[in-house]
Image (tube, rainbow, N blue to C red; front, side, top):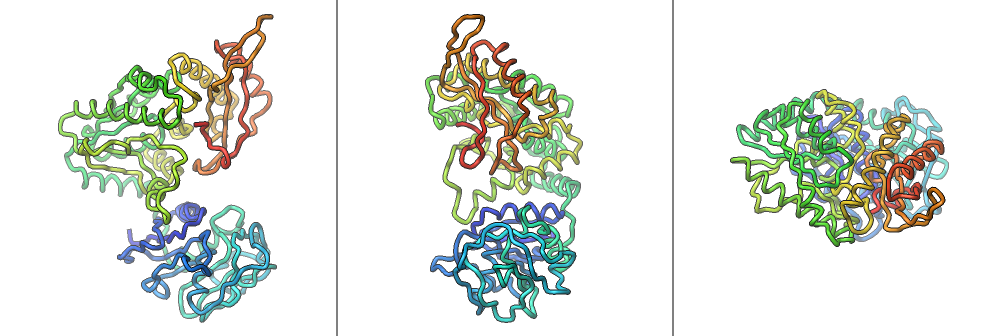
Length: 509
């Protein structure tokens, strides 16, 4: 690919959003830490400098070497990137009298500037900084201002270098996508060739070249990522792909048999392994969330290792890793603080001696779905809500038993089926039920009960990094609560979780 965009990450919470917006223009881009600029820039036709929580005025400010970029490749500095280009190239950055955060209007836009083509004055933008550019860098030409920010945008004469103090990647900036299109397509000449069809063709060819006639084993979960990865590999190597779907006893009601049936119709070579007893035994007397995750991870490794050894001469392990995981692992500050361990095939130990293949490692979640649709995967499967790797174990607060799994499977089935029946499923990003470690007093048939409490949770999100609770209709919640209490033995109270992420997480454990 010779029409790529390089995004240098200075640690902004919005960096992934810049990449998502660029990809929405059908342009391929990559995020690299500011201190790890690729040696070979020949494949990049434009560079974007991200924002940052840092100030350019501090001693430890992120300070990249732009000698091979500035003045040689079309360059756009965003927020910190704009301040960096001013501060280190003979301009001046100073603290703002007031913190410039939130919505603002571009009260002045210089006429005839390509960066603002088809963008009118008074368009809304989103500011997020405590410093401001007081003096433009050498050769700087002011392009736009707001009521509070004189140098909201500028360019450097004699170069294809542009800078803006607002964030075009957030939806609050109404013409942000147009600005990125102006810079990348109309000014830098980047081709809009990053399409699902092109990705499938290129990836299948790359997989064939990398794998050849070797065998690949893939752990299927029934979710979107592993399914799309499996179909891509199947297109590339056919019968040399061996898929393993493990029933850990913590799946949704009837999910093991239903998913196996679904995969049969897709032509995949899938072996179903029922290891539910093994997993439940491993979880016995382990109420701590991290202990549960580790026990599940270890049990999965044991089962997967057994099954992989049963296949002769396997060389590769396939994983459904997607781009946010890759970005996180090479972020500016290293991997984030562990909020909770992630359970996936990536946890397999070195003794398995398998080479890794990750066909989706450069895709965001929404792109995975579009690639799946391009390959004809059923839209019902592509629209499935995310489901945690440890399954219902982390939705059962406290220790896990077969009886608690039964209760939660029944509750979850009523909730999810109800969402479908009320045409709400596709309006929710993720939904599930939590079995709480408390009993409550109730009355059924004039008799006192002392039974379990369940919490229902439904959130809307784009990538799970932030999420808001969904305002489900009262009538739906009323009907769902009645069905659960009347039909699931052991439950006498239902509550609804109205916490957003942050500060809460989507899952309770």
